[in-house]
Image (cartoon, rainbow, N blue to C red; front, side, top):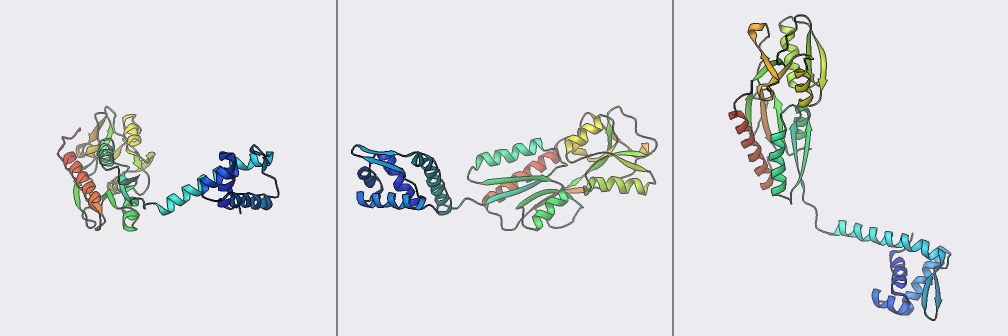
Length: 287
């Protein structure tokens, strides 16, 4: 192992151009610095410096070592600073569902992060069931997730009105229903499958996506029908009604859940998310 003290003496001699000036830089006597260089040369079995009356110069082996020595000393200083400096602020971990319009929500989260640069915000986007499980395991601090109504405690909850949706101007299918769905485990997917099976209508998965934009695009393109929250319906879609033979769908809820021991920043973020959801609830439906 190369001793950082010996490497520091070596770099100092090279940069200072001599042993005396190097000793002044590292607060050692000239003889001590000379001994350190000699020990380093003995350890490596190579001559590193050429000494003459005018100063010192590097041998070819010394030139090779110089670059490594500087990198080792820099990494040593970096590790020391990382371990002895102030501890980084704990991360505030937020989970948001991948089956929600995220553009406006991301603006809220981004504004929070910009206003609190001292907070290390970590955002995870995923399936609601996965987010709630991560919150229960202590891997998230806050989760905004879809769930069965009244499925547990929550800071706030909002009822979701679900609808059958197809592309605007698209005729609903007469035979096997082609489902446009989120990946398995999504609450909406389960609602769609169970409603069709209760109604005795055959179905198949025609398109599967892990995000809302993919679902919305597939509906617009006429690839099938889907169950969505009415907040996710755009002008490119139309709602399929009970009068057209589409079965009723039980509502779900959007729940804002959080750890009990959140700090001030976490509580502020929960309040911002609740205000965002309240505003979305009051916004007129697109369809």
